[in-house]
Image 1 (tube, rainbow, N blue to C red):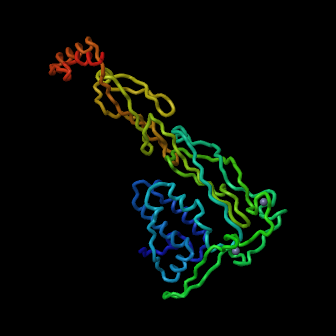
Image 2 (tube, rainbow, N blue to C red):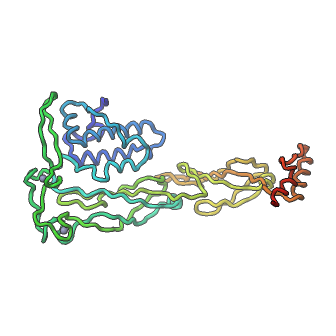
Image 3 (cartoon, helix red, strand yellow):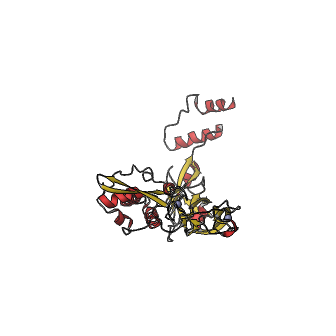
Length: 370
Ligand SMILES: [Zn+2]
Ligand SMILES: [Zn+2]
């Protein structure tokens, strides 16, 4: 049971409206999300706290009970807040988690819209200005967003008198509990359309496919989300437009492994290169880089290319590209090659290898011929 005041946790006043609660929650959930704060247990703690507060205050019945008793009877088993996936946040916002309660504005807020955007490691280095294709709803031009044929304004719903909510008061052992639910007649809009517009069937909005310009900063992580306020679906009546969330997905590049700002890549060298040393070219994200493999390099040696990695999110020195050296042992040897290697071992005073169970190197050759 939390001892902290839930309103304080979200940084809002006790008479905050539903959309204030929602936007405070969104802001804090993004700030403290585990994906944004890896290895920071205090942020994760905060993230859970914010989620618990929101789950109570966003529910009119639970909120009323909390206001009256200061207790939250059912702690959320929180399906949303356990994992560390940024997409979890969306589950709260998408797919109609219900009309926001306690609204006094008439109308309906527009839906939030999510799009995925595929980007490359180059985009992570440079950032990118691009357009995303957004399927959203926009104001119907036939009825100018009223939903009524010929642009006729909707009428106030008589069931809820325009409140969008109907409430029942129950007497319980803790006193009166007021429960609000969405008005069944108007679906929470507070208004009804008598003669619906034929184009939008009274919905006041129609589907559209729009291109929205977005500026992606350098240094973003795979799965990070860009929030574009007001670029979701249009609201109806006094409802506000929804927001656009662009989920950034970095295309997998087989050559590199990413850990934050550091990139890892594998360099195959021959035994001769590792023993004698060499100058080689490494394919970086953007261009090729010259690299010295020192003489006597051991398998698994890591060589750092300074600033060959990725930049931090808000600018600054790029991370390193770490080249891990893999020494390739030849798998097929000619008789001459095998002889030279045995001589090499002999020269170094090493035991001369006996070869594998097939009778040595020659046995290996015989095996290959079949
Ligand atoms: Zn219309
Ligand atoms: Zn109503």
